[in-house]
Image 1 (cartoon, helix red, strand yellow):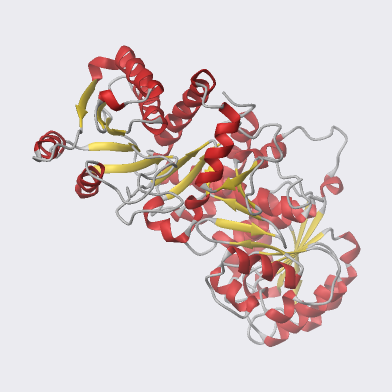
Image 2 (tube, helix red, strand yellow):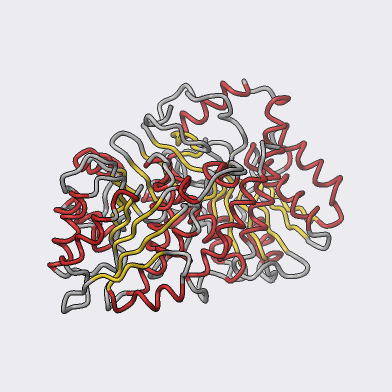
Length: 537
């Protein structure tokens, strides 16, 4: 059990020292047991980096890659990932820089060199970086690499065993890569070289970091954020059948796509719309009609059976024309265009049909609307999601017994906590305990918390850094809650689903010139992809 809730696809976040101990217990240092895991890691990195390369426009033809290969397992993973890339892109070429030289490679890394040479030797240019004090290595590598344009640089020098400081030749090699202006995407395997339980300020600067098998705590340390880029957790099956990894993870877990897999399963043959719940949405205002529209649209995609939206009367007709699947109830308006207290009876009269409630997207801050919301929260005691302008200290503490989910960004979290906008994990746990709620703390990454556990979703990215993304997320979480899903599970599933759809959107259109509402068009696609991912290679 994880925080009293079983979350499929949740894997513990471990310190580098504890991850090393866990892997030692798993493999016992036996190369015959480590080799299959390395092959899985290499293929997983290769697939992931090719997918992420689509976001900045895809690879050139032929794809050119620069590979930084250390002497240990990270170097071997990088070489195996290179094999996958070259297998997939027949015209691709790779420059592989071996640090410090072939003689220092450990047995499995040397085996990876042999496999790469055997499979694609004619498309690989090898260079050793031995760090001669006379500077000839640096001059030679600069001369050979400076004039080349690379689609991808793959860092596999140091792994979780790193201890600062960075030493030459690694130091000057990372400096060379940092100064190279013609690398489209920089990726690190497991951790950027120079990052560990203790880190070096001149560590490799990645656009993406691919955590293989075990998610290490430095990946989610804000002090490392500028070096990590976006984190991808590649689950290699290390924790299958192991609910307790044998080491303390301080109640922190990372979420993979498996958390949404069951959402794509076949539904029972004789179900009807009432089987899957009825969500009430009380939101919207004259000045912000779009927010409630986006939350209702995503709720309609969540799998909930029925959605009824209570909105200002001035927008109900247009909303019904745009999203006819929902039932739109026009509500009396305040002079400022918010929801008037007069509409309370219309909502309460229908409350026996309601299985979950969403309040907040586009709500506005009209004082009368706030009174209405507080009275509705006390009168309709069903699982509830509060978002946006409903995230006020008095509203989140309204008298009720049903579960409560809050979906704040950093500023809203500070407002309801009446404290710092930069809440640590410990702060977040304390806020959850004091309010008695599940909190989805939106950010990079998003953290889902109850009173004793934090789940981290690394999915999504800068494409979500625009108005409306939180409204879409709130609708998904609320829709899942209405189907009867337990609050933490609904929060984890909604957040991961939202992030996966954002990743798919960015890979097709980049993260700059896209419309946020297009995320909903990818929800079914990513759910089907997750459902097809059965087992591990």
